[in-house]
Length: 393
Image (cartoon, rainbow, N blue to C red; front, side):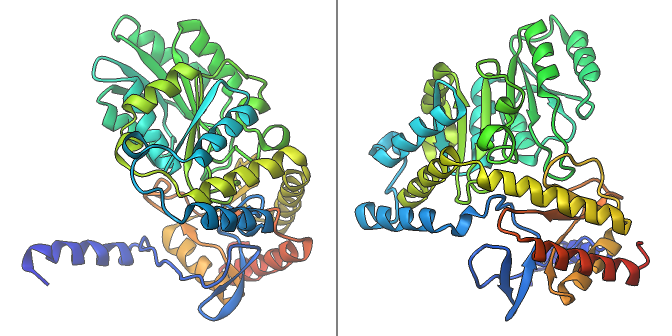
């Protein structure tokens, strides 16, 4: 190794010593309630596949048909080489599903944020951002060059205070919040945040990555959950979680979507999602519009598991969604707990710094509609066994 790279080896060793080194396991099966890892079947508590759609027959069939008709790749960026009619169909369907004027698809939810924020605000502007917003929001804010003013997590009074303190000191401003916070599973008080945005006539943007397919009627998301249709300027989402595919989406007013087609850099300079991805997303919308069965089962499973964990004696934080953080606090303990769970046949990774603040390490359990009650019981039994072994309960 070159001597000028020695520092990297030192940094990696420091991560290992602190219990912060992340070992990524290799999966050799489709996503579902159970996975094949290292030659064994293990219960899957890691996936964001909330509705079990990643391996749903209707999505698989739609993707296969799209491959037969369109092939596997989009060829180039849409702004240069044209756009596939599947992308247009998906965007129209998503706009209808979200009850907004228009929608635009991106390569990922991360890129949807890094496209949207810099296109709406710049160096003369201010972003009021929840302290626990996702890394993609943080990076989008930094790329914009706007001044970033954080407010305390889900604290509407704090938001109002920081806006009042900056009045008269910006050209434009935007409030940005996650809808569902991915590590804690709590929901932003979007209705009250909207009241503040309206009071000061400020743009409002919500990243609904963990809300789409989960919150609202039939999984229509946090805006539907709070009855705020037509009031939230920008909704950003991902298609890699409840939708079970890959990609991102921005939904909102037609003028914002038109502007992003012209100045959203990831849209302008990166190829679109593939035709089979777009076709599978359309199939996911079909399923969500036809029945609430999967969303209902997701919430039933979440309630069942959370009650079981609390009865055993675990701290599951303040989550009000299917995201179930098992709070362990100490980073080495969380890593050891994850390893012990795997030995018991449960795949549940530790989440430590920098994903969460130092001293807030946890096992984040992701419940899915793909799980049956027997799967959840098996998971509860494993957590109880490991918890007692390690002195957590």
